[in-house]
Amino acid sequence: MNNIISKVNTSLVKLSLYVFCLFFQNVFADSSANNLEKLLANYHSYQASFSQINYNNKNKAAQRSQGLVYLAKPGKFRWEILKPYQQTVIANGDTVWIYDVDLAQATRQSLSKRGFNAAQLLTEPATELSKKFTISEEDGWFKLTPNKTDKGFKAAFLKFQNNQLVALKIINQLNQTNLFTFSQIQINPKLNTGLFNFKAPAGVKVLKG
Image 1 (cartoon, helix red, strand yellow):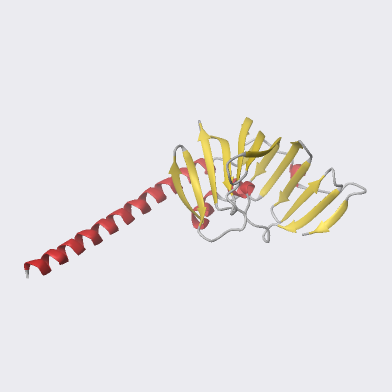
Image 2: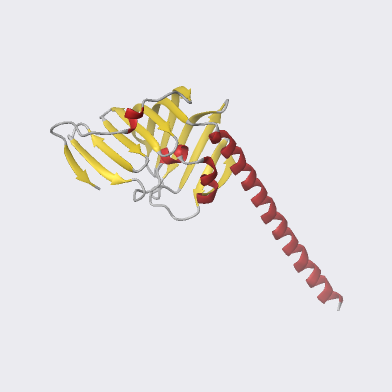
């Protein structure tokens, strides 16, 4: 009888510990989500220069680029790669354009059909992120893991210093990493709405994605 009671008590202890750990995981996740939401809630627009390093799945730098980024809520962004080649990605909230200058080619896509991308992390309403991602904090980074499998990425990391977004890291499904570091940061600048509109220059081939 005592053995039975002992086994029951042991099972209850294990169950209690499991529930306790699960509770605190949820508490910490909620706390991380709240912290990130508070930071991003203060962002209405954002402008910066960026340096990007692409790492292969062996964590070796494969490519480097530099450019400018402009973001505005809701859903507007302009991502300009200036070096080593020129490419601009522009979204107005409904449509996204990918303009390859060297190829004289522009691709038009519906933003809703395109996989969730890095820029949308910052242009989505802050409260929407916790609905789509599990949010935690690791070594000074906010980690966002999609609740549903996303073709765009496996996990995203955001780093803030003095309430400014200074770095963004994206890990895709092939375990390749894109690391963006930001400088010359402006929070809530007044941005010209023309930055988020695109009209193909003469001679540029337009494709539908």
